[in-house]
Length: 274
Length: 305
Image (cartoon, rainbow over all chains, first blue to last red; front, side):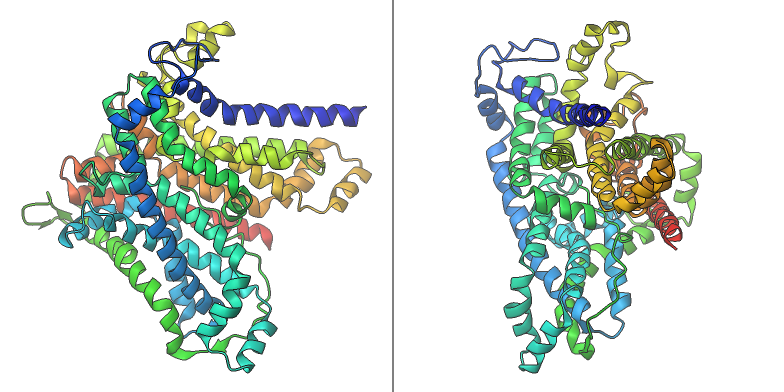
């Protein structure tokens, strides 16, 4: 009896926090799907009828189509580059004895806590000198560099956990490092690598300060930047704002729901936040 | 953008007999190191260097020693920016961790059906772009928005106000947005931690006649030490770095009531062309983050011993 009461209390508490987590998204979806100007106040703004007109208007006015494509290009490039570089370096730190390896590894770890705020100023002037301001490169290079810190930490931990017999057997067979990595380790490492790639993609997608500083032309804007600019221009029109915000969020939500296991595992043990 | 914590790494005995590769092993590290050095380490160093200069980005730099750092203590808007981020730590770190512990205490040592569903939902806010979060909460806080509607529905209409435009309430309102982003993260982290605590410890506590409160302090809390370290580090860093939400909701206003260091860095460097002074704020923020992170990890480690 008491146990059941306690069991129910658990669900009441969990459900309350789940509703609080979901309400802002669901409520804003109602507003975004309501006809323009029909939005009533109230905590449950159920639309009089559903329409996608706010989405098309927001996409048009904020050039969201191009911005979403830009974000995808940058995020994919960053994910590929950071994954390859992290796997290579993680392999070396995890399985080879490198001179001064510990020192260099710790050097990378500084990237784990360093925020963009502490390097954004010279980064902008460096990019300007390299003529890369307002290009994808001004995002891809710094993002790859910063995410490497997590990637190397993550992959090194994985490679260290591989049974040494496996490596020794491969080495006795005369396999080179490259062969061992490609034929033996990468296939085993697939779960760890997939977690890392999902995180990299979403980190890059969510990035805001870096595009805000680096990009000036609307043709190059990422989705988050387009949304931030749009919010500044039309912040009285909640229908368009919420439609634009959800458009930017939906790719992340889809990826999260598909890969939530990898996601939560990566973020809890590796623990990054965007 | 991102940050991470190391204290959670299992202290496993290295079973791998590492092969000595000499310097040739660096072939694998070099590509990563080159990118990292060029776009993280070098800019960090440049930030420190710039902070000793007066520079508008166009004309010649002028060495002014520590003058930019002196401004951190004398300029009231800078001082208040750092003070605001200390207040945000309460909302973005302490409150979510307290909520997470509360939930862990209630759920400890019990099988929860549908946990995957709750975990997925609770964690969702943490995953969203913070710009999106800011836009959505801007709607929630509208004068005729859902929050004020809820307040008047439950008879508290007299406290309804334009939350983000209020000199007193704008900062706590932004803080609550941060609470919303991180509480699920803390809960999921602690729930998974609680499930790793051996059930024999709870049985022993019950045999000793411990009530729920004693049980929490004697078993649950000590068992969550490494999760606490992770939670504190990540949320405190997130709080100190707050930028996106403020940029899209209040832009530091009304007045300077919600300015934070990151916003000052952005505005000083890219709007007012006070580049050296902005670099000094960057260095100060980085130093605070490093010191706080190490303090949290040290504390966590000491408890482990």
